Image (cartoon, rainbow, N blue to C red):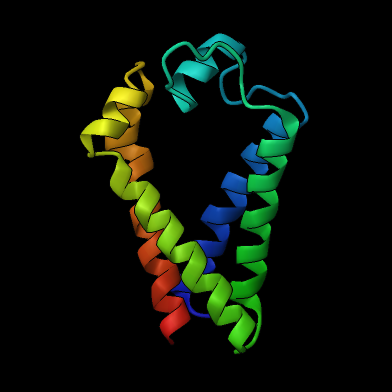
Length: 134
């Protein structure tokens, strides 16, 4: 396993753990649901965290990506990694697109999205695409 693959797996695992916690109703790292929604959802009018199914689906998808990174070369692995890399890169790019800014103006999400979430998604997406290409 290369350093890039290791770093990607660690970061993706941390994000998967957060989504799993949210899926079972543990509001971390902010214990107040309303404040957590403002920090991680950011949509106008949102007052509750996404339900257990969407959170569990994100966590499961991240686990599939981690397992694909670890797996040996195959066509399925490459397809999964390319799809994940493209999705994460697109999500990261949204942080600076005006229509997304209008959809998610709530603070602190709006600032965190431009400074943390967007760049992190872009780096993960590009990193995964690099792994897929090697």
